[in-house]
Length: 303
Ligand SMILES: [Fe+2]
Ligand SMILES: [Fe+2]
Image 1 (cartoon, helix red, strand yellow):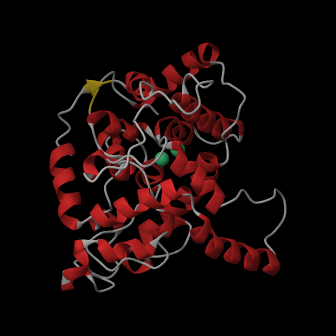
Image 2 (cartoon, protein in one colour; image 1 turned 120 degrees about the horizontal axis):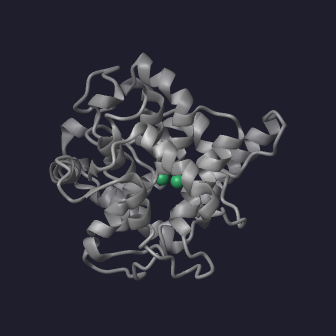
């Protein structure tokens, strides 16, 4: 994306990733697509565990720097400040398709062949869900799930838009990638935040838990009145890899979360593994998606 790749002393101006997709490319390296039709054998899962350990040692420098900033600056105070700023949703008024076009104004410099990088990821995700015969709200969740990345266009740094999300206000799970970078997070010195439960009660439910700030949580608040609960979980927790992939933070979840996380896990392969060089025919697909959007959303939403 057109954000310059810069590493600055000022964390608000430091954009170590060449583009936001570099984080997702890195996720695919960490979680390679399983071979179709084969049950995971013991030998395979041992190999995966080994690859995961190896992963952190071989991560690209830009990705490491990105996680260093993310883990250093995502504090309870930072998350509260961003919620105060964005949850009143006073930045813009626009419809879903307009938001997709707005997101696309983040042009990808690193891949000039792709004119519509963000829109294509959204449509490819939605089309794969549609091909598998899932309900219309599931397809719609795929179509919109990354619209919260417009945070970048509101001036947020990469580390406050993308990256694996995690709860703040309690001990960081060692299942969070690059856990070592939390050594620099000032919440380390707040005793109340350093127990497994932190400021929360056991089984409180994720709705009561403050997650690190990013595109998932922001979009959830924009669309929460309009979609069924499983779609909202997919949107709100799709980057919560420590939770949906690594099984961490079960002590903060309630039974509803556990049930709904089956949907989050069902969504994840469509997000990670549907990137294709085959360009979606936007002119042909647009009427279908405009109708799908109109079925659930008003013409305009507050962002
Ligand atoms: Fe995402
Ligand atoms: Fe995505």
